[in-house]
Length: 296
Image (cartoon, rainbow, N blue to C red):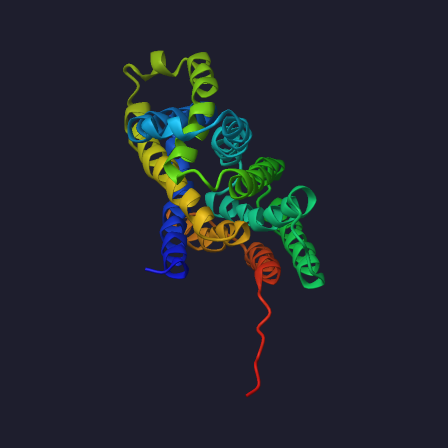
């Protein structure tokens, strides 16, 4: 199978898995605090990855570990906590749409730090995408006064972390297997996440707590599927394609997440949907390739 076919298969699978992660976070928060959800997500995913990929860690050099440490903190440590915190105040569907700025940030980080060239059309796309983000947040603040849209900053910071992660992996870690990169990244995040979990007292609270017992299945699904498996597939996608194409998985994630949110009773206004469409249009402009027509 050619790479062009494989990368689209990975894109669709990841869109469904990550698109479903937002509703899993929402259900997990019924029994756990945001810090506990983020910490358990990292710890559970790390334990599975250690079992699957422990031997692959021997392929990393000292230089590789330096870049893995940076990438791991940017994508494997902070975002699980940030997304859980954001969803205490913002609907899961809106959170997924805000995450669509990741390809724009991937392009900007690539330009600023990794020598990526940008054309005039792409500059326009970046500006349109950022404008769409402002529209989306402003519409949410006006139509959902009970929600605190300052928490949208957690999603913005997460998207920026993903942008650094994608560019670092493509530039410095593409010679490693996706399993090795994923396992090492979560190895970096594991111990700080475990310390946070101990600090929250989650292990003592779990005994005799019915809400935690029920929600733990959502956390485990989030960790094993939405985190461990999804990150292995995503790192494979980065290896097969360009950084911006890999980040384009966020085009389709909102479709799945908004559907789950709708089924769960969430309301999204037309202006918010318009903001989401503006973001996607800006991202499309950034990624659109010029078609050259050859005359015979």
